Amino acid sequence: MDTMIQPQRASHPSGERAEAELSKIGNTLITKFHVLMRLSQIYDSKNVALHQFIQESLLVINTFIEKQGSLSFKIVGDDIFLNEQRLRYSVEGFTSFKYLSTQWKKRLIGEVVYRQSLNEETLREFIYLLMDLEEGEEENAIRFHERLRQRGISSIDVYPLELLEGEKGDSILSKEDTREIAKKVFFETIGTVKEVITHIKGKQHADVRRLKRLVRKAVHLVMEDESILLGMATIKNYDEYTFNHSVNVAIYALAMGRRLGFSRSVLSELGITAMLHDIGKSKIPKDVLNKPAALNEEEWGQMKRHPITGVEIVLNLKQLGEVNPKMVIGIFDHHLKNDLSGYPKLFHHKGVSLFGRIIQIADAYDAMTTPRIYKKIPYTPEQALAIMLRDRDAHFDSILLKMFIGLVGVYPIGSLVLLDTREMGIIFKTNPDPQWIERPLVILVERGRQGKGEKKLIDLTERNGQNGFKRSIVKILDPNKYHIDIAKYFL
Image (cartoon, rainbow, N blue to C red; front, side):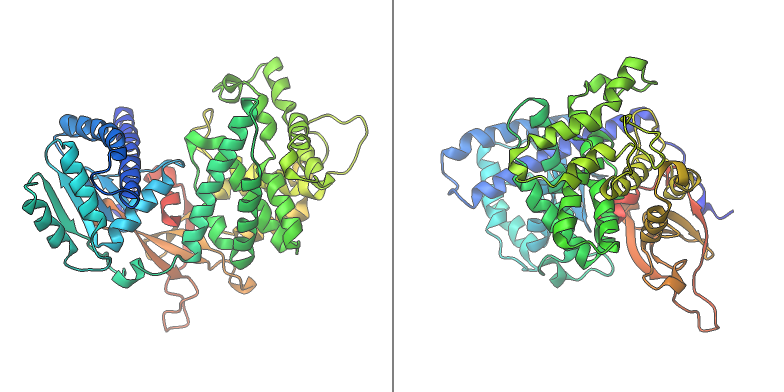
């Protein structure tokens, strides 16, 4: 078999820990630089207000340099590398990550290497010289390097931005496209859900107005192109599961609501309901939620109560305004199952609400395809849909499930596939034409410099000139076996 599709050897756990630790430090460093760059736009370089923050930043920077010998930030495409390792940014770090990347790209700065510990004056000079560069000037790296030397700073090296094949310099300076807006909405929403749930858990005032505004933005994005947010839902943050899951469920629910022809106002209500469907879990002890073993009877009783607790919480969130009964019923219903064999147990039989049936499907699919503390290797999208189809009559509304499968595709978005050309690809977007449902848009998985996965979009309806197709799907692969991070292809 072609070595290209052989599974890679699993990395050693200690190596994974080291990578996670470096990413954590990297996110802290990027946040420090982000704040310094922002402050430089407010204060002049001699302002005393900067002193305290610069001292805090120097402590982090110099500790890293003393331990590693040097500090290098390099931008390659959409990624930032810290000392040759690609950083995985956190939800909280996304804004800083994006700001630093954008500002450096605008100035065509690709890499900076700090070869010695810095002092306050050196760090001030570096930040202000960087932000003083004209945007779009090809000679910026050389000019920046020379200005540092003129000020007696010889321990910092600056290199120009290297554009990858297919990238255009002018596109870096162009307006944000829909995909960039979707990323911002996605990560900001996760952060806002986290803030709301954390405040409720701590019995503090929870501001849900921002969440309502973000849901309206998500509705707009889904109406414009549902595939963009569906791509975002492939992002599965293990450490932020509760919040990430809430947003993913909302994305799937909104896409289903759009297919059902819901108005924007009803979509907004559905989005908020899906976003808050698990809010009752905020009252469950963390050791129960994160228990790696099976729950005992008492713990399972606590878990089964979360839909009722969720209803109580939502009814007391005054900033939601007038709560439509559909919303609280949707939260109550989301674990009832189609045959009412789920929970909470009912004294009187009733049908499961439409919001509840939609959220049941979205909730189950995202939960099955996400790593959990008790199931580190999740189901592939194909496996999850197969299980859901098997249980469709008892657990799900079969008509809505059929629609959901049409939404995510015969080959679900985010699936890793083997093509008949021996290439691997990731399903990027379903084909809107029913006759080509088995021929979606695919991102080829290719390895470029530093092992970076490069993005090349392929339409599987493309012909080879001989009444055949250039590429066809052979089978679905398990990305865990090949150590491929699906989510990064959608970022």
